[in-house]
Length: 268
Image (cartoon, rainbow, N blue to C red; front, side, top):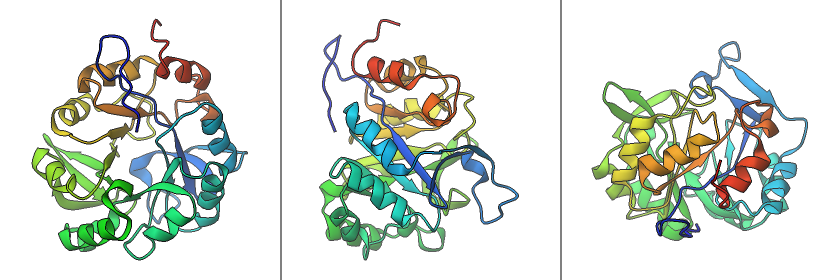
């Protein structure tokens, strides 16, 4: 991940793109509604373009560090199509284990993203973390500490963000995980897909806690949210936009303008 310093001499938070896959299609979903019950699922957008289209778009604009997330079964082909369109530049997550992680790197992923595998029956397994890290190497592993808020704490959520685990997201847990991975991805599942603003408290905490490159996703609704994340995290946390973007059917943020802003044109 680039940490290019921009005006002011310190690193600035950047826009990190995503490709969320559900039933083989690129979608934007309200994160807290993901479950096996289709009547509960709330979908904001279903793309008419295939996954490779978005990979090629990100390639054209030089948007590194993007993630392809497989939300449930039936997404392997679409994920591999995206990786083939820009090999070595997109991360992939969803159903990643120590047994299949290497296969995804061979398919073109820059890194693999793991969550649920680390929490059998909702309990953190250091043994599994060591296994997947050994399988691909620390530098090729991203740990997804996507979470849901409970009171004044955030607890890691797995299984499409429906199962709350026994791990609290805090400095202690992030320090432990950072010994085995090179990056963190954090979906704030409670605000994911709602376009009602980021979890400012969580972003500020991450800025104090993280020592690795970290991408936050959830609730971004305006161009100014990138500057807000930059300020709250002191440039340590990057930001993913989803449902608010025009390329995903949104009306709040223009993709081209966001790209320019992220690349350095921050006068707006």
